Length: 381
Image 1 (cartoon, rainbow, N blue to C red):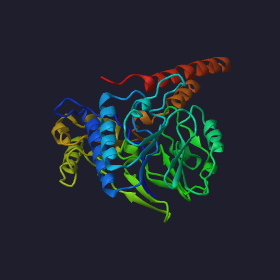
Image 2 (cartoon, rainbow, N blue to C red):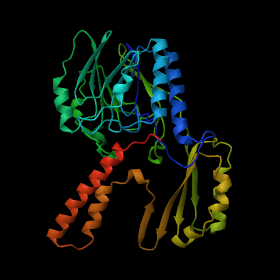
Image 3 (tube, rainbow, N blue to C red):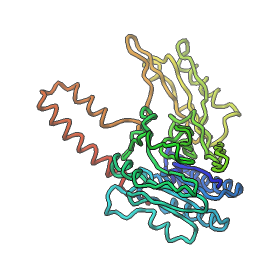
Image 4 (cartoon, rainbow, N blue to C red):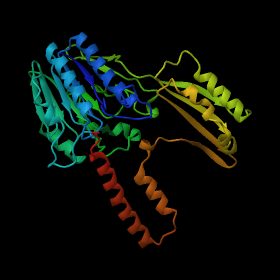
């Protein structure tokens, strides 16, 4: 069997402030367009199946356009006779057993669609292959319980599909709700292939275990990652990268600001962004090094607005240098571990031990509830 492994499409993600001619967030629209173009690319390869290892949607309550995009993809796959196997990831998994999953709607489609979304192991037999599906779980320990349920079939190829972060990539945590670690002992070489989702870079983490990575660049922390999918030939034991349509994310260059005036820095930013090698509607990151705080405040970004206009987004990554102060890099808000930040803040307040325990525990509960509600809220306009 030959299959295509993809994951983390995050349909519905809307970032930056640019809109298209119809008033839709441009980043969101590009994700939809590239996803469907990617499906067309995969169809041309005529695989025996497509495996999606979680986070098809960015939200647990998908937008209408997210649904219609997936339904369009299912129509194209149905016409081509290609089955789609999907598990839920932490972004699109309901957080209680009493909430209806968005994937229950897709099961009404006539296409050959197999979905695991009910907090339990699911076994799918498809031709000469058995797929062992372990969706995102409520608790980290539930992965091992589900894993212990599966039975290898000696007459078939055995493929496991799951979503989470392996212990070997613990330092790559995305700090998102319901992000669970997968015990690396589950990555058994008894499987003919293990299709993983959640980590957005394309990476091999076991003899036959791979993250396909996300189809798109979803944060600037991924700027050096390989994007796309993987072509897996179970009979030959071969895994090859598959290039798929993607909005470019590029390094625009680094500017040494130590001997430059704010005006010269602005001119150099404009010069770097005027390069024709940077395509329109791409995401570009520029780095300003050895920048003092006074100089940082004097840079006229308003004069650069016209230069920024042709890009989907431009991120100015500043390394601010002060006397007796280490270089500080900007972080994107969704990369912040809010619970850890709150804990550090409490420790600096000088509370008594009893007060510190009370404030820490109370604050943790409040933050967890807020983060949970944020993932559950309805995003459909």
